[in-house]
Length: 194
Image (cartoon, rainbow, N blue to C red; front, side, top):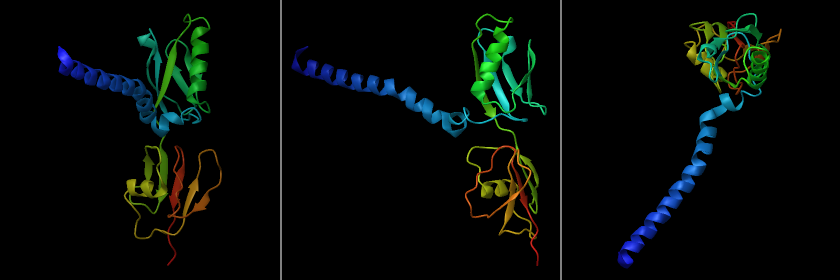
C-alpha cells in the first residue's frame, strides 16, 4: 500500500470520525429544532375544546389515532370512552390515559401523545373576513388581521380589543404591540368614530 495509501486511509479515517461524531450529535439538535415552539411548550400548554391530538398506543393500532377535544373538554377514546382532556397538559393527558388503559384494559400500556393542531382563535368587528381561524405558533395581532383579509374602511386602527380564553373582560391593545394571539382568544376590531 505504501505511504501514499496509508495517508489516504488516514484522511479517510479522520473524515469518518468527524462524520460519525457529527452524526452522533445531529439527532439531538435536529430533534430540538424540529420540536419548535409548539412541541417545546406542549408541556405547559393546556388543552381545550377544538385541540387535536395524535394518540399512539404501542402495539394497539385499533386504539391509536387522531382525536379532537370535544366541546365538553373530553376525548372519546376507544375501549375506555370519554376522558377529560380540557385543562390538562399533553404529559398529564398521557399519564391519565396510561392509568386508565392500565387499570384493567391493557397490561403495561405504552402511550405517546402529540399535539397536532391548536383550537382556533376568533376575530370579529371591522375586518374583511371575520370568523374563526386556525391558531399557529407566534401568531401576532398583525398576522391575525392579515389572515382575516385586513381592515374594513371603517376600522379603528389605533386600538383593538383582546379577550383571552377563560377571561370575561376584554383589554385594549394597540396594533403596534407584539401581543401574541393564543388558541381560543377573541380579537375585536372596533369601528372608528369620524
